[in-house]
Length: 453
Image (cartoon, rainbow, N blue to C red):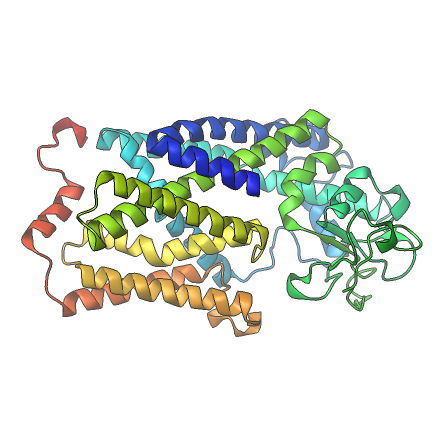
């Protein structure tokens, strides 16, 4: 984390918008290659198909379809069906809306349009971006399905009764030493068994280890696995599943561990690691640049200290970037959840705060600063409060408003933002005529000529 912080800070501060744009092009090439090549290997090894998009509907060597086989595996172990999911329809709707509208409101994505000279170029770049994003995202469901099958069959064995710990492959013990996989032998049979339920108690049901990974004293006497001090009681319903869950697998490692679980070549595993690093650095750099610019230019130069020189503005941007890097590093070392959930929360905040203001600022000439600020505050604070309560202060899922999870509440915050912004805009003076004309020019620029088309 510390090395990543330093790398991002150096090239974000020194490179600026243009430098980061070219850097992110290179990082995307690494990322797409690093993700798709293992996906192709994984798909071909399990189904004989080359493309993950078609492999998801293919047939395995035993004659079952991929999804049919996976549904049978997880249902037998007490999990909900893979194809049916575990979330309610309303929660899935709100999560999808939060991710979709949140993407449209992400500041570090929007500023990318400033790097092209014409409106037409911005539209073309957006279209190509969707193509490349779809290329990556459309392969994820297949990779997830294959990874789940491999994990279950490796841990539980061919007979689905568990694999003796001494026979577990090297990848299992490597991730165990890293603290990202843990095993507690609830039934004292010496076998690793993966099923529904929590193997450990406490916040996020993560294992708490006694001693460091290299401390031989802090190992179980019988099997030499790392000693865990917070196991669950191991209870389970025999009518639903054959045994209690004894395994904890950190969700963040699955993309990295998939090639190892599938016994792919070492260079493929290294490729995945490079792609993960490229993805992290690329996103962090874009966000860092936006934060630094917002603080130095929008907040200080345009609001509080209009007399600032260019040199002072640049220094303020660098200081803001430094503070942002430190905060991001701390959160990275003490994450509030696994990566996908944290990203969903961030998208929800963008959905609740930025998206409504962007839309109304472009398409509604009556919108003024009072409405925009009021709407943003209501949307942001309501969503942030909901997230903080349920993620940090012990809120229970049974108390979710309308059954909406914190990951999906950004869409509700967005609705509140729209309503408050509209009402406040109508209760306060209209914006000046030149502002209304500027809003009109955003949609159809004056004297734009062929650039508009």
